[in-house]
Every structure is written in structure tokens, then in C-alpha cells.
Image 1 (cartoon, rainbow, N blue to C red):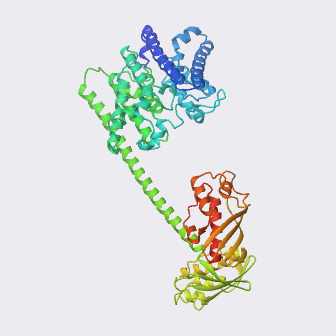
Image 2 (image 1 turned 90 degrees about the horizontal axis):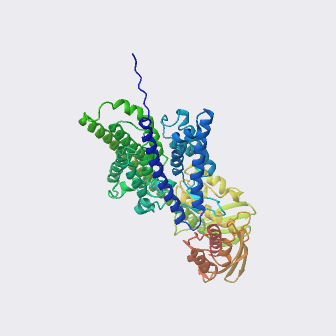
Image 3 (image 1 turned 30 degrees about the vertical axis):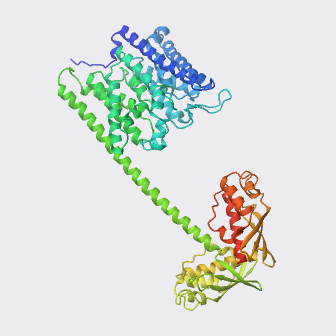
Length: 616
């Protein structure tokens, strides 16, 4: 004879006990609901958040009860009895409490329907479900409408963006961004977390009240206290291990983990569901340890910053397995029971330690990469600064027919080169090195004269730029690594200087030089037209006038150009020093162009440097 034992909820064995339990649970949930409504009424200047929270509760309960009623009609059962014995309002309230205040009402309705229908009714109704019904709806809503679950009221009653206490991220999201280490990037205090003064779900509005209601319900025998005690205790132990590993405050850090997210609410109102949790006392403890372990692992290593929802659903699946392993009387084999608890905790601690070590390795690697990137950026900026400084390392010796004789530094700064460059329109007609006494004998000198050039790149440079004509646009990006890099750079600088000189509209009156030029600022299609007056004898820039700056931004570049009023302090300082008064040639070196109108400032500085270089 074969006997099959079917696991059913213990609360179905005593009908009166079931109704008393669900009544007490309903009262406990309504206390949390009432406080959440008070919280949104008291902490906001308008009633929009209060109305939004109330509508979430109403819609969830109405849809949940209606779903249960329709199920009764379809199966031709007494509808009132179906609702009375199905307790859909409990599932609907728990589901609503897992939602943030900005959840659209259609999402609330869908989630409540899923919770009752897919979470409970398809398994046979109350007491037959294998997963916590409210969590089934919550997870499916999260996966399907994650971007709609906002922690603030949006566009309701004409009020835009009324935030859930603050406009910052929720504590779990914020801490996850710091690898759960907090520090200066975490702006919430422990009291904020305990009193619910932060963004989150409706059921996270007051941790101390949730725990108080949980104690009362445990005293009333509504649930077995072993599960929440094991769950919360495991969170304390594992977060304490993580705190020790990372030098965090052992007194406050574990408590912070209990107050963040839905740990307290999940431990009291969802993990204790007698239908989906183990039946034996030891099984409940193992179940609670598993919940704490999964919550911490998901928090520390998963992409989703909160682990309560998924940990409870995963442990719901393992409930039959736990029951199958833990059979027999609970007042025997005490040593083995303690050993089982110790092993579960030991494995959990080991895994969290491993996760913490992995996080430390990731942080170290990220810091090393950041340091390398910073060094690389610093080197790039240094190289760019050197190139910008060298860009005007030339001066005009004299003008010749069709061009200029330029003086520029090559290998030896004490013996500059003199180079004749002739330019016509967009073409460099010829480049001729007149003097190069300081260049190296077997490298720079050979490139200059083209006699047995030592490298292929050197020969290619000589053949292209020193023996024939070429377009002015070809000068940018020339590879100067020819084996005589300093010589090549000097020649290129002379060519660039001659091109600049050929494009300048210059008027000379004694020692006063007036340049009119176009220079790109913010808008490449509308370059600035600038007139710069320079005193060669005094080595000062006397005046800068803007003939056209219509392409610059209205509230930054335009104000910087005209000085009315400049948007930033750096912008005003730039205007006062360089655009509203005289300044020396040397004062333009190293100027900070980050003024809030960086592109405009850079264009002005480039124009000034061109004028100074052309005047030397």
C-alpha cells in the first residue's frame, strides 16, 4: 500500500485560527499603511503624494478583490465565501507596500491582478501557492515596468517632480554605487534610515514601526518568529563580516543594512508566509539563514541593488527541499541541529568573505585603471600644452616677395634656423632653409640640405616639404619623427607661421600693429572676427575689439566677449585682464581657458598668440 503525503498550509487545519491570524495580519498591515499616509501628508507641502499613495492602496485592493470575485464566478462558487476565505486584500496591501509612490495606477492594477491570479489562484487558491503571491506580482512588474516605478510623483495635479523626501537616489542604489561601503558619497544618516526619511517604497516609510508591529504579531502567534530572527540575524552577521573586511564601523554598518530597502518589511510580512516557508523549527531557521545569505550576495555582487524580493522567491522554491531533509521530532538530535545551523552560517560567511575579497580586487583594479587613465590624460594634456606652446615658436625676420623669412628654433635654441617660406592662397609655393648652424651633422643637417638623409622618414619629409609646393592644409598632422625631430618641428613651425602671416590683415603704424583676423570660437560655421592692436616696442597688447561674434553662445560666450554680465567668475577675470585692459606678451602664456565659454576663450587666446607671434 502506497501512502502519499501532500504538504499543505498548516493554517488550513484550523479554520478559526486562520481567520484570526489573517485578521491580525490585516490590522498590522493597516497600521503600516496608515503611517505611510501620515508620512506623505506630514512631510510635503501639498497633498499630491498623499493622494498618490492612497490611490495605489485603493487600486491594488479593488483589483485584487475583483480578481478573486471573478474567479469565484467562473468556478460557480459563493463569491462572498471565495473572498472571505481567499483573503485577497492581504496580498493586495502587501503588494502595494512594495511599490514606490510614483508607480502609475495601471501598473498597480496589472501587478495586483498578477499577484492574485498567477501568484495564488492558478495554484488552487489560498494555501496552495508555492510562491509568495505579492512577490510574484512585484517581480513581474519590476521586470516589465521597471522604468515606471519612480520614487516621486510626476506630473500629478500640475505639480512636477515632487520627490520622495529628497531628490537623491534611494539608499540602496546610493550604497551600491559605493560597493556598499558608504563614506562621503552616502548622504543618509542612520536616523534617516530608521525613520524612513528617504526615497523608497511605501512599506519602507518607518523601520521602527515595522519592527514594532512585527513583535506584536509574533506575540500574537501570527507567525513563527524564528524566520525573521534568523533572517535579520544573518544580515547582521554577514554585514558585520563585510564591515570588518573593509574597516567600516561595526556598530552602525550592520544596522544600516537592516534599515535599507525592504529587509525589515520582507522579514516580517513576506518571508513568514506559512504557505511558502518550511514547517519544522529547524527548517525555518535554515530558511531564514538562506534568506539573509541570498540578500547579502545579491546586494554585494548582483546588478540589482536590493536582494529581498528575489531572495524570498528563491527560498520559496527551496522550501520543499528543506522540509524533505529536516524530518522527525524537533526535540531530538539537538547537536545535529546546531551543527546544521553552524554549517549554514559558516558557508554564508565564507561566501560573503569571498564576495568582499572580489570587490576589494575590483576596487583595486578600478583605482589602478583610474590612476593609469589620469596619468595618460596628464601626459596627453602636457603634450598638447607643449604643442600649443611650440605652435607660435617663430617670428618674422623680414618680408620677401611672395612670403616671409621666418626665424624658428630647431635642435639648438641658441642657434635658430632662418627659413624662407613663400605662400600663395592655399598653397605653399616653396620652403628654403637659409641658415641652420645648430642642427646635428648627420641628421638635422642632412634633412635641411637633402644630402644622404639618414632615415626614410627624413628623406620623405625633405622630398615633400623642402623641394616642391604643397597645400597649406597638409601641414597639420605632419609626422615630425624623422630621426631629427627637433629640426623637423622647427621647420614645420616656420611653415605654419608663414601661413598665418599670409592670412593676416595687418596695418603697421610705427611700432603699432593692427591685425584683423577670423578665429573659430564656439561655432565653426560662424568664426569670430577680431581686431587686435599691438605695441611692438612696449611688447603689450593694447586693445582687442570684436567686429563679429554672432556665433558665440548667448549666455556665456557673448557675455564674455562684451562683458555684460559675464556668467562665471573665471569668465569675468578673463574679460577684465585680457579684453578690458592692456597686458604684456608674456601674460598670455598658461592662461586658463575654462571660463564657462571655453571654446570662445580658446579662440580669443589663439588669435592673441598669432598677433604676438607676428609682431616679435
